[in-house]
Image 1 (cartoon, rainbow, N blue to C red):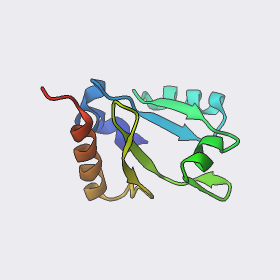
Image 2: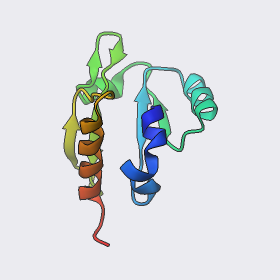
Image 3: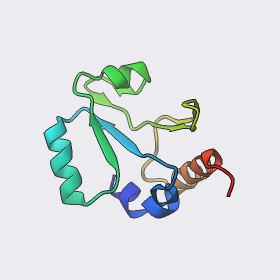
Image 4: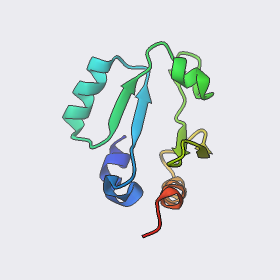
Length: 106
């Protein structure tokens, strides 16, 4: 998540017309503490029972996979990145392009 934080302005239009929501199996108190310590502008949701992860096919055993879903303003999933390769710069470029396609014309 540090990469998302560090590239937030570039990847996510500095939060303008973009909402980034990280979903984790960690407890909400753990996520809140971690987000505060990391000073991240992202939002987090706790999915301890993996209900959301299972609905979106983003689970693998006891953990959620590193999956990304780009959702347009109408609520449609326009891109799935499963699994997301957090070590690949090409994956971040692909993510940025997908986000930019969902933004309103300027």
